[in-house]
Length: 228
Image 1 (spheres, helix red, strand yellow):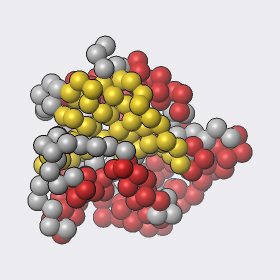
Image 2: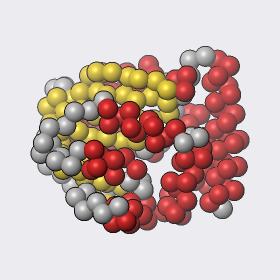
Image 3: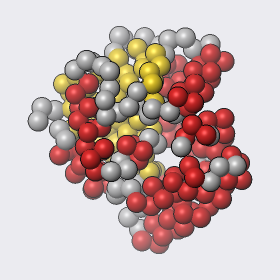
Image 4: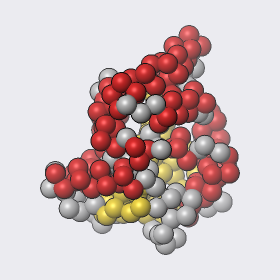
C-alpha cells in the first residue's frame, strides 16, 4: 500500500502534523545517548526522516534503516544521497523476520511505524519478539507514535480529524485514498498509553520514560530490554 505514495509522503507528514513531526523526532534524538560505535536500527524507516537525523546527529554510531516497502526505502536512499549521507545501511526486510544476529543493536527506533506492525495481535507479538531478540541486554527500544488523548473531548476531536481530515488531505495531495484512509483508521484504533506500556512489559521491556505531546495524542516512549 505504501509503495504508492513515497514521493508525497514527507510533504503529507508535514501538512498533517502542522510541521510538528520534525520537532517530535528532534525530541527523540534528545532522549537517547548512543556511544561511539553503537548500532542503531531505525525500523519501518519509511522515507528515512528519522534515520537521516540519527546519522547526522550521531555520526560515530552505525545507523541501519529498514523497511518492508521497497519504494519507500528507495526514496529514503535517494534523500540520503541528496544530503550527502553515505553512512546509513539500508535493508529491505520485515519486522517479524529480521536478518540480524541476536543482541546486535544498542537501539531500535521507530517513528510512526509502530501502528503498521500492530495491525494484528499475532503480527505485533512476533515483531516485538524479533525486536527484543536483536536488541542487546539493556538496549533501548524508542517509539514515537500516535496515541489516545485522555480528555474525552480532545479525543473525540482527534478521532474526527483522523477519520475525516487525514484521508481528505491525503487524497488531495497524493491522489491516493487507500493509504490515508488506513492511516486515519489506525490512529483511532491504536493503543492508549496504558495499553502500550502493558504490551511492551509483557514482551520483556521495562519503561524508562514516556513523554506526551498534543494532549497525549502523540507519545515518545523509551523502553529498555530486560531478560524475560
